[in-house]
Structure formats: structure tokens, C-alpha cells
Length: 602
Ligand code: GLN
Image 1: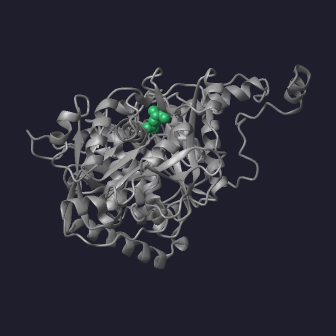
Image 2 (image 1 turned 180 degrees about the vertical axis):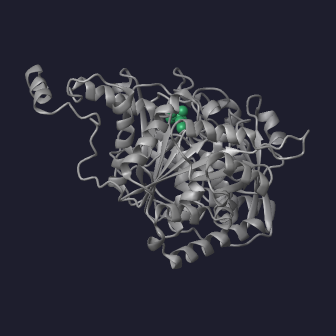
Image 3 (image 1 turned 180 degrees about the horizontal axis):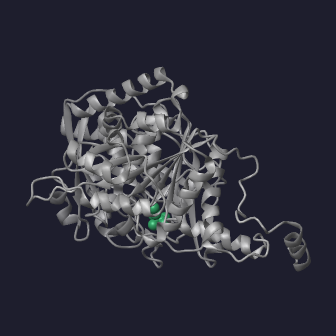
């Protein structure tokens, strides 16, 4: 906009309104209901799991739900975050790199989410600043209130309109009292006022301590945490008390008294055996009914749909409780002590295990010192291994030693992304006599760069990083294991830069490796496998299949691995594996091209 038209637009539109941040065009206040979950007292209480379970209870009633996570940090997305500190980077089908909580929502709600469902302070401020530069504030000074808070409300309303959700489920990151989240809380206060009575239900998640030296539950920290929320002008409607043991009635009554919430809406949310039990636990306590009552949605509840959804879920729970077998699966990796860095892989193994009536015991394999000589001993107790995704050089040789051992000794194996690349390197070195095979990510000077950047990536490399991100279609070759899993086409999610260098494909295939999944548009190898006469289960994928596994629709690569691991652990196991319908979303077709990202990845 040139300065003349900028001036025109400022003069023409009135700058008098204090609101100054209008509703998105066509938005009807009060049509969509909102549930907002705040954390008090401390982090690490499982706010994401709680929120997604409560959202599931509402979804089971036939309501359309759309969740959104509001993150306090200034990063635009989670792409540059270290999984060691923040947990895994989750990737959505549209290529958004986001917090792992989005994975929790996708799994709980069996939905494919988009960039609209993930918001950071960085995104909010960027929009405000861009708008300021184009004269969007009509000559006013830009302030936290109403402009920044207005942008937050805008995001929620755009989500409501874009998804036609009955209920938008808002999870505020962090804990009440954190400086970086304060404006989100203020925006929620305004939202409730503007949307009208009973349109926005505030849920406070708090913590009831039970110090061992006292042996009784103490409510003071919870009271203070909720008081802090009330100081921000938010009167909670429902309080969820996290605790080790069921929260006693007297304690709940005390919290009720101090927070103006009827004790019938102060609930216990104590530890339970498995997160899959939480939706039933919430229903049992009456959380879902309290939300529905407050939001006046009784008429919209579909009881038959709810009964059917609960039956399916309790079927899953009962299969989970009574496994008839168990296997040991090892995960090799850099972040061996941090389970959050591999959260989706762990979940995918759980889903596959429940489907096959099998308990999957996890073991972490430290590859930092692993060599050909020590691999046999390090892997001796395992029925299968996963070599997961990674960036950089650390641990590569240990992983290659591991892959060699399991390939030669016919131990079931799944290589994911970096693991897939290491499998190609190992095979090139040991089955194709290319001793100095490597990835240029690890050794730029190696003689056989079997894993390399593609020429078109090299061209834009100077501009920053290039990353192939998000859902891509995969064409599957008939007569392969992958074809049994998916049929002729599937869709997987990606997050990587390096590829199998096309010039080595023929050599690798001549020695027995089968590239059974490829991009339909480019010479990009997406799935590899060894044929059944060479190995019971040796599969790799350039994608991240763990991102699309759902409890009721386990991802086929993991099913195949666990099934083969059972065969390894129980030699007379003969049950055939029937792959469920593919999880490929019908969704958006993203160009199969590398996307420019301005930052390097960890
Ligand atoms: N570092 C590898 C690449 O960039 C693998 C990435 C991953 O495992 N996510 O291609």
C-alpha cells in the first residue's frame, strides 16, 4: 500500500472504536461454544491429555470439536525446538511443525488437524506487526489490549468458522501466573464477555498435594492457584483436581468454598493406570455432563452415537488389559532417557500391541558405544527393534551396527526416517560392497553418498535449510509387503532433508533391497523392505509413520513389526495378520516439493 492510499484508509475508517478488532466477517457470536482449559499450580499435570480426553467425551456425544493449543513461546512453530527439552516435534498433514500435544489431540479425537489448530505467541505478534506495517490499525498506537488480545480472539473465531465446530476446545499453554501466557488469559476473559452468557466454559486444572510426611491431602496450593486465575477476571466453572489418589470430599468442598464453584463441579482427576482410561473416568465423575449443562448443549447430544463410541472404546480398554503375549522391542536413539522425544512411536507400539493382544515392553538401546562386536549382546533380549528419526551424526555408526546385526540375524526391524537412511547405508556397505557408503549429512566427502540432497535441493540450499514436510502421497509397488499393508497408494507424513540418491537404486535393488514405496511425482524412495525369503520383517520408511497411528486404526508398519516380533518370541505363533483400512487421510494434496524453511534443524 502506498502512503497516499494508506492515509485514505486511515481517514475513511473510523478509529474511534475502543474494540478496534472486529469479528471476522460472517461470524455469529454465541453460535460456537468454547471450552477453555487453564493449568494452575504447576506444569506437567497432563493438561493436554486431560483436555483431549474431555474433548473426546464431547465428540462421542456427536458434537463437532476443534481443538487449539495456545503456546506462550515466541517461536513461530516448533520446528526448531530441541526434542530433548520439549518433547518430539509433531508434524501435521499440512506440514505444520507443532507441539506434541497436537499429536495427543489427533490420536484422542481421530482427527487430522491443521495449522489453524496450533497457535504460538510468535504467530500472534507476527500478525499484529504485519498488520501495523500495512496500516491496519487506523492511526492508533498498537497495544496489548485490544490489539494483541483481539488477534487471539480472531484466531479462535476463524477456527470456529473454518471448521464449523460446535465446540472449540482451547488449551492455554503453561501455568496461570506465567508472564508469557497472561495475555491469552486476558483474551479469554474478553471472549467470554463478548460471546455472551454460557458460551464459554472455563475449566481449571489444579493440583492437590499429598506430602508423604503428612499422609493427607492439602488443598492450599490449589486454592492459591485458582485465586490467581480469579485475579485475572476468570471465574472457573469447573475445577479438575489432579492428585495421586482420589481427592476426598472435604478437600473438594474446601476448594469449592474458596473458588465460588459448586462442589458438584469440583472433580477429582487422580492418577490412573493408563491414559486410555481417562475418558471413561471423566464420564464416570460427570465432567462431560457439567460442560454440556453449562453450555446448554443438552438438546444436541446424540445418545446412540455416544453409546456406540463408548462400546468401541471400552472394547479397546479390555483388550489392552488382557494381553495374551508379550514382546520386547528396542528403540535405538540419541535421546534414550527422554520418553517424550519418542512419544508418538511409543503410542504407535501401544496401538499395534492392543490390536494384536500383545503387551509391548520397551527397551532403550544406547548406541553411542555400540559396534559389530557388541551388537549381539546388546540386542540379545529383543524380539524387534526400531531405529527412529534423528538429525546430525551422533550414534550413526552404532545404529548401522545394530541394523547389520538384525538384518543378518533375522530380527524384526523398522527403520524410521534417519533409521531408513541408516538401513540403506548398511546395506550398501555390507551387501553391495560399497565400504565407504554414507549420508552426506554425516560425511560430505564419502565415496558413495547413497543418502544425499537431491539436485533441486542443493540449488536452494544456500538460502537456508530445505525440508520435505507434511503429508505426501506414496505409490506402492504391487507384490510387496507394503502393498499388503496399503494397496497401491497411501499417504504418509514426512520431515527430512536427505534422500536415497537415485543413482544407487539399481545396485541396491539388484542385491535384494526392494524400494516398495515411491513418490508418484519424483524419484524419491519412501519405503524399503527385504523380501520375505530374506527376512521375516525388515522394513524402513523415509516417512514418520508414528504420526498417523491412532488407537483404533493402528499404523501398518508398527502392526507388521509387532506381529513379526511375536513370531520371533513365540516360534509356533501362526496367526495371520490382517491390516486394517489404511489411515491415509483424504485431505489436502500438498505439492511434493521441498519447502523452504529458514532455520536449520536439530
Ligand atoms: N536427518 C535426516 C534428514 O534430514 C533424517 C531426518 C529425520 O529422521 N526426521 O533427512
